[in-house]
Length: 313
Image (cartoon, rainbow, N blue to C red; front, side, top):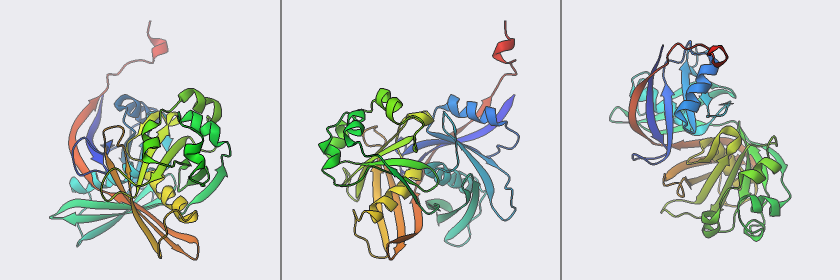
């Protein structure tokens, strides 16, 4: 059984082997849910997307997003990367210098803007839902132990360990230095004991500054509950990161916060995510995340028609 053609690309980078890899199936109509999940597990990328016809004809398409472990209601690098593939393949046509399309995702309609350069897609930016701030995790010592750090590496920031969601909840953990970020060794046994089934499955760790010129924040993200030990670029967490920074006045903006988060450095996959947070009188009014993509190639996935395992003897 031939499942279909897929595209492979790197997201939040301008060169091969950087950023976060993504597989995009541009014709996902008719693929069963369980098969979508099995494909994502087989490809073993952070996410795989399937493009389907929209439920509302006013929107561009419906996009389903799968990690190796589960389906997500929204994610950043799959949204940016899927828009890039549709534009590159001529499924979205240029309109002047910028085109806005709308994806149907699990959180509802997600607007995405595409900048064009010489008829090809360039910078792509998505709008994310406004943030929801969740519970705080008060035991910094336990979180530090899970990260193989000292409690002071967290406590010296004077910032909370807090859940923030712009569609998908992440636990944000502030760290006091780039040197401490490099020392992180994530302990799955302690995560399983402390956070399995908690308010957020993803642990997003960050510090001010960066290894690369132009970076404002250095980030890492761990999500074993989603089948992702460490993610090289997490767009779905970058919007909430910006909201966290605004709420706790870590970076003092005017009416709009603009900054770059670098991620994936320790994995050898440098990623650069541009984030914009609009706010007025302390209230966040707009959340946008964007970047560029590098096309890597394509393939065909074929499956043999085999009976279920329990029927094989």
